[in-house]
Length: 226
Length: 390
Image (cartoon, rainbow over all chains, first blue to last red; front, side, top):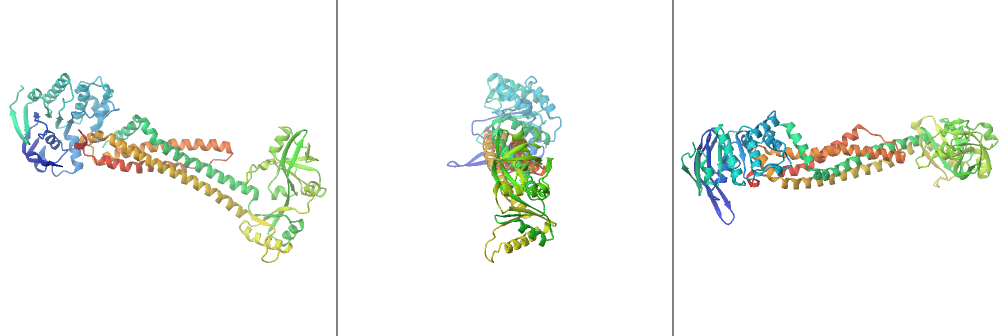
């Protein structure tokens, strides 16, 4: 599903000079995997996620998504691929205010040729257990519920992979636990999931745990769950 | 892309940010309303003016004003020029007190000849016009306008009643057909007509007529005919070459053009004013939308992350502004028609509403939306998700 080979990325920061964030990284993620990525701040976690999510391009190396090299895709093709292939979950939820849960979940369908968009959105909200909150606005929902709306939005287009950047970072422990449970459930139902976390406890729940440090990847340990 | 969802989401956005939408709409509403009302009343008043000029002049007519005009001048003109098919003198006796059984008012008194009903286009709706006996005997008979009749008799029949013009008693033999307000803004339905001989001898004691109207056979040649009339008058009034005329001549052609072009100036100003309002509206909308884009950077970043292309982001913002301005345009059309009908009632000016002017209003509104949305849309489309999704 995801194949990174020799991928490097560096930024030029004023006063700091050139900063190498990813150093010739290799990573393969197969269909149905549940991967946790941990690492200290500034270790390149988010940069890795951005590259995997087609929001940023690598300086060198090759990235194949579903077997296709992405380096040659135009901006429009990248947008379409993000729409169909990837579901994003962010630490800050990024729900639209003044728009109901259903309409928020409907959003990715706006950019694809979908029919029955409202029904699909409601189905996705049912999958994350929010069938009672369809017409609530984000400010009427708890943090955990908001994040579940965001997960429903990531699911609604049936993506090949879900990328979550610190999905529990803004949640209390209980809500965080529920979100992770939801991820595990989705993974058991077949979804491929990659998530970034600071929390080693959460990382253990994944089928694979990758640590990133100073731009290099290390596999932490074999699967801790079974 | 899902067009239906895109459109409904634009309209939803508009409804959810009510205050912002209100501020964006006001300018377009007012601009379009000005355009529509100005156009409706402008065209209406122009047509009305043309009608009044027609009413006063009629096609193919020549008006002569001169303080030294006499009946012999007119007889000479009509005998020399075959194309003059009818003519009638008019003596203006001016404002005078008019009263009936203690009801006092003032009215303009004109002296007319028997053919004036045709030449001056002032027939009677009740009673009779002047006959040759009235003229030859300088009879004390009068015709009055409908409004004056109302003032003096408040609904009762005016016919055969005795009124005083100044201190002279007159018997009313007819009521004039209503003609409304003339191009100078005076209500011609408040006039009093008496036989021209009566006006000149009994009221004013004058030997000069003052004005006359000629009807010529070919409307197209009226300006040439007027030149010939001027030539005859100069000769008869012994005006040497180089000296100024002691008369003024207006033709129906000249009056029509002058009246219409005067209105055109006003209409052009109203049109220009509405364009200025719309331009200001566009600037306001553009700056509001730029702020909106800044407020919604994370929304834009999110939309791009979940698969919106640059074009779709641009389109979204263009649709949002266009939806606001188009709906404001529709409201503006309604408002303009309302204002036009109120003003039309109040000033007694007819309104003429054309589909082209409504289309023009809506197209202007839509153009404002698209033009003012361009810069904000471009800025929104250029945002990068990784820079704004923090």
